[in-house]
Image (cartoon, rainbow, N blue to C red; front, side, top):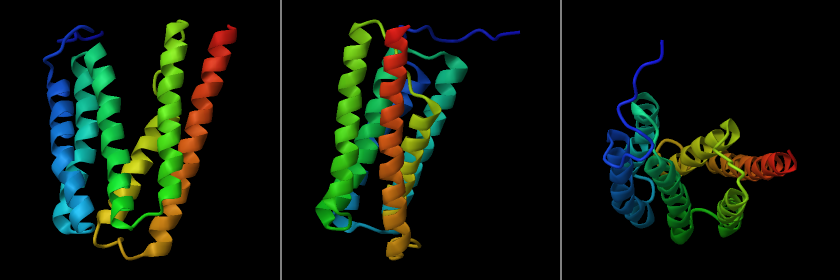
Length: 184
Protein backbone atom coordinates (compact mmCIF):
# COMPACT_ATOMS: atom_id res chain seq x y z
CA UNK A 1 0.00 0.00 0.00
CA UNK A 2 1.44 3.37 -1.04
CA UNK A 3 1.34 6.15 1.55
CA UNK A 4 -0.08 9.59 0.85
CA UNK A 5 2.55 12.25 0.22
CA UNK A 6 2.21 15.44 2.27
CA UNK A 7 3.32 17.77 -0.54
CA UNK A 8 2.64 17.94 -4.25
CA UNK A 9 5.16 18.82 -6.97
CA UNK A 10 4.32 22.54 -6.80
CA UNK A 11 4.88 22.95 -3.04
CA UNK A 12 7.49 25.43 -1.85
CA UNK A 13 7.35 25.43 1.97
CA UNK A 14 8.42 21.88 2.74
CA UNK A 15 10.76 20.57 5.46
CA UNK A 16 13.19 19.33 2.77
CA UNK A 17 13.30 22.78 1.12
CA UNK A 18 13.87 24.50 4.47
CA UNK A 19 16.82 22.20 5.13
CA UNK A 20 18.19 22.84 1.64
CA UNK A 21 17.92 26.61 2.14
CA UNK A 22 19.58 26.22 5.54
CA UNK A 23 22.41 24.29 3.88
CA UNK A 24 22.90 27.12 1.39
CA UNK A 25 22.99 29.72 4.18
CA UNK A 26 25.34 27.70 6.41
CA UNK A 27 27.58 26.96 3.41
CA UNK A 28 28.72 30.59 3.31
CA UNK A 29 30.37 30.76 6.75
CA UNK A 30 31.65 27.20 6.34
CA UNK A 31 33.35 28.03 3.03
CA UNK A 32 34.82 31.17 4.56
CA UNK A 33 36.21 29.07 7.43
CA UNK A 34 37.71 26.59 4.98
CA UNK A 35 39.37 29.43 3.09
CA UNK A 36 40.61 31.17 6.23
CA UNK A 37 41.51 28.29 8.53
CA UNK A 38 41.69 25.13 6.43
CA UNK A 39 41.76 22.00 8.51
CA UNK A 40 40.24 22.55 11.95
CA UNK A 41 37.76 20.60 14.02
CA UNK A 42 35.21 23.41 13.73
CA UNK A 43 35.53 23.56 9.95
CA UNK A 44 35.28 19.80 9.63
CA UNK A 45 32.28 19.65 12.01
CA UNK A 46 30.38 22.24 9.98
CA UNK A 47 31.33 20.48 6.72
CA UNK A 48 30.22 17.11 8.11
CA UNK A 49 26.91 18.61 9.28
CA UNK A 50 26.25 20.11 5.84
CA UNK A 51 27.02 16.80 4.13
CA UNK A 52 24.76 14.81 6.46
CA UNK A 53 21.88 17.25 5.97
CA UNK A 54 22.08 16.54 2.23
CA UNK A 55 20.93 12.99 3.00
CA UNK A 56 18.30 14.24 5.45
CA UNK A 57 16.66 16.61 2.96
CA UNK A 58 16.64 13.84 0.33
CA UNK A 59 15.01 11.43 2.76
CA UNK A 60 12.38 14.00 3.74
CA UNK A 61 11.64 14.77 0.09
CA UNK A 62 11.13 11.09 -0.73
CA UNK A 63 8.95 10.63 2.36
CA UNK A 64 6.83 13.78 2.02
CA UNK A 65 6.79 14.13 -1.78
CA UNK A 66 9.35 15.55 -4.16
CA UNK A 67 8.81 19.07 -5.48
CA UNK A 68 10.00 21.00 -8.51
CA UNK A 69 11.49 23.64 -6.21
CA UNK A 70 13.42 20.96 -4.31
CA UNK A 71 14.61 19.35 -7.54
CA UNK A 72 15.93 22.79 -8.53
CA UNK A 73 17.40 23.87 -5.15
CA UNK A 74 19.09 20.67 -3.98
CA UNK A 75 21.55 20.34 -6.89
CA UNK A 76 22.39 24.05 -6.55
CA UNK A 77 23.12 23.56 -2.84
CA UNK A 78 25.32 20.54 -3.65
CA UNK A 79 27.28 22.48 -6.28
CA UNK A 80 27.70 25.56 -4.09
CA UNK A 81 28.95 23.33 -1.30
CA UNK A 82 31.30 21.07 -3.26
CA UNK A 83 32.68 23.51 -5.81
CA UNK A 84 32.79 26.21 -3.13
CA UNK A 85 34.75 23.88 -0.86
CA UNK A 86 37.22 23.03 -3.61
CA UNK A 87 37.60 26.70 -4.60
CA UNK A 88 38.24 27.67 -0.97
CA UNK A 89 40.96 25.00 -0.83
CA UNK A 90 42.47 26.26 -4.10
CA UNK A 91 42.40 29.82 -2.72
CA UNK A 92 44.32 28.59 0.33
CA UNK A 93 46.87 26.80 -1.83
CA UNK A 94 45.90 23.39 -0.43
CA UNK A 95 44.60 22.02 -3.74
CA UNK A 96 45.99 22.45 -7.26
CA UNK A 97 43.58 24.42 -9.47
CA UNK A 98 43.64 21.98 -12.43
CA UNK A 99 41.51 19.16 -10.92
CA UNK A 100 39.05 21.73 -9.58
CA UNK A 101 38.84 23.41 -13.00
CA UNK A 102 38.11 20.00 -14.59
CA UNK A 103 35.29 19.34 -12.11
CA UNK A 104 33.88 22.87 -12.47
CA UNK A 105 33.93 22.61 -16.28
CA UNK A 106 32.07 19.29 -16.08
CA UNK A 107 29.42 20.78 -13.78
CA UNK A 108 28.87 23.77 -16.07
CA UNK A 109 28.82 21.61 -19.21
CA UNK A 110 26.32 19.12 -17.77
CA UNK A 111 24.07 21.90 -16.43
CA UNK A 112 23.93 23.48 -19.89
CA UNK A 113 23.48 20.06 -21.51
CA UNK A 114 20.51 19.29 -19.22
CA UNK A 115 18.88 22.62 -20.09
CA UNK A 116 19.28 22.02 -23.83
CA UNK A 117 18.08 18.41 -23.49
CA UNK A 118 15.10 19.58 -21.40
CA UNK A 119 14.06 21.98 -24.16
CA UNK A 120 13.96 18.95 -26.47
CA UNK A 121 11.77 17.04 -24.00
CA UNK A 122 14.61 14.88 -22.69
CA UNK A 123 14.66 14.45 -18.91
CA UNK A 124 18.03 13.59 -17.33
CA UNK A 125 17.52 13.14 -13.58
CA UNK A 126 20.49 12.30 -11.38
CA UNK A 127 21.54 8.68 -11.69
CA UNK A 128 23.35 6.62 -9.07
CA UNK A 129 26.69 7.56 -10.64
CA UNK A 130 25.91 11.24 -10.08
CA UNK A 131 25.00 10.58 -6.46
CA UNK A 132 28.28 8.70 -5.96
CA UNK A 133 30.10 11.61 -7.59
CA UNK A 134 28.51 14.15 -5.21
CA UNK A 135 29.29 11.92 -2.21
CA UNK A 136 32.91 11.50 -3.30
CA UNK A 137 33.30 15.25 -3.87
CA UNK A 138 31.98 15.94 -0.36
CA UNK A 139 34.22 13.22 1.07
CA UNK A 140 37.27 14.67 -0.68
CA UNK A 141 36.73 18.21 0.61
CA UNK A 142 36.10 16.62 4.00
CA UNK A 143 39.44 14.80 3.74
CA UNK A 144 41.21 18.12 3.25
CA UNK A 145 39.54 19.78 6.25
CA UNK A 146 39.53 16.82 8.68
CA UNK A 147 42.53 17.24 10.99
CA UNK A 148 43.09 13.46 11.01
CA UNK A 149 43.65 13.20 7.22
CA UNK A 150 44.61 16.75 6.17
CA UNK A 151 48.34 16.08 6.39
CA UNK A 152 48.26 12.66 4.68
CA UNK A 153 48.99 14.16 1.27
CA UNK A 154 49.18 10.93 -0.75
CA UNK A 155 45.76 9.91 0.57
CA UNK A 156 43.86 13.12 -0.12
CA UNK A 157 45.56 13.76 -3.46
CA UNK A 158 44.71 10.20 -4.55
CA UNK A 159 41.14 10.71 -3.39
CA UNK A 160 41.01 14.00 -5.30
CA UNK A 161 42.03 12.36 -8.59
CA UNK A 162 39.61 9.45 -8.09
CA UNK A 163 36.93 12.10 -7.56
CA UNK A 164 37.94 13.89 -10.77
CA UNK A 165 37.77 10.60 -12.68
CA UNK A 166 34.30 9.75 -11.34
CA UNK A 167 33.15 13.31 -12.06
CA UNK A 168 34.17 12.87 -15.71
CA UNK A 169 32.68 9.36 -15.97
CA UNK A 170 29.35 10.49 -14.52
CA UNK A 171 29.27 13.39 -16.99
CA UNK A 172 29.90 11.05 -19.91
CA UNK A 173 27.11 8.81 -18.59
CA UNK A 174 24.63 11.71 -18.60
CA UNK A 175 25.54 12.61 -22.18
CA UNK A 176 25.21 8.93 -23.18
CA UNK A 177 21.77 8.71 -21.56
CA UNK A 178 20.68 11.92 -23.28
CA UNK A 179 21.87 10.65 -26.64
CA UNK A 180 20.04 7.33 -26.18
CA UNK A 181 16.83 9.03 -25.06
CA UNK A 182 17.09 11.46 -27.97
CA UNK A 183 17.36 8.58 -30.44
CA UNK A 184 14.35 6.77 -28.93
